[in-house]
Length: 115
Image (tube, rainbow, N blue to C red; front, top):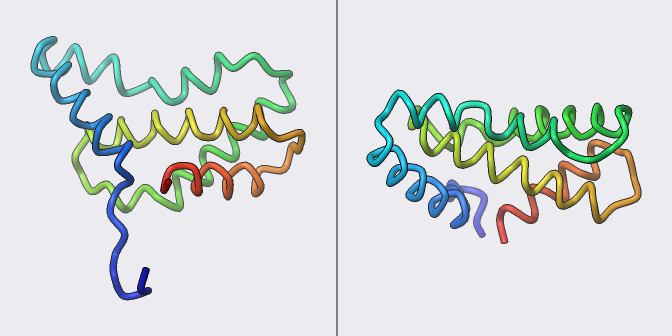
């Protein structure tokens, strides 16, 4: 991919965003927004890991989100879907890796999201 071409959201994000739009239309905007706003953080907080590793995972999520958040504009559904997908990717990478290095988790999760 050329450096001048801006990379769009990964396909998974687009699909999650579409699914969240459908749920929102069925549930009503306020109800769905309340349910999706904290989804990513809840996934991380409910992970079955020790407290120190959970801190590393949370840092990895926050730093990774800082790197990619600008790609999703102001569409709250796209943002919620992206955060949920990122949380899932971080957890998958944390489960597969023995390391407690946030940067390694970030790199792996971002690669996973772009596949």
